[in-house]
Length: 125
Image (tube, rainbow, N blue to C red; front, top):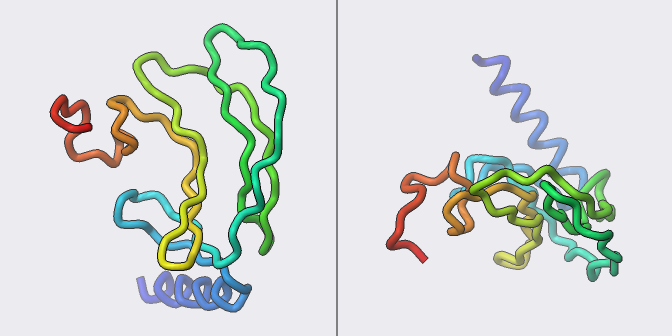
């Protein structure tokens, strides 16, 4: 256990010294979040290919890799009946930018069901 704590401390220190990026768990999601101080560039224009039966279009987006924003092209992902696809997004919070990866949501409240304490709540907007 002590070895794990030391390893995590060294990893966190190396991320901090890498220049602006930090992976920490967020309060709203149990998944790791990416926080950077550099805003993402404007999204690139992509021509969406014709629809494919049984698939959902996941639009292109920027990800933080190697200390910089890298464009990831859009693609079709297999649809999950009863779920809505939430595209990846960047949100500004307290002068830093938080990246949330694409995910599936069953009740449309923006919180993936595996992290939702009350999934399918009809009274929630």
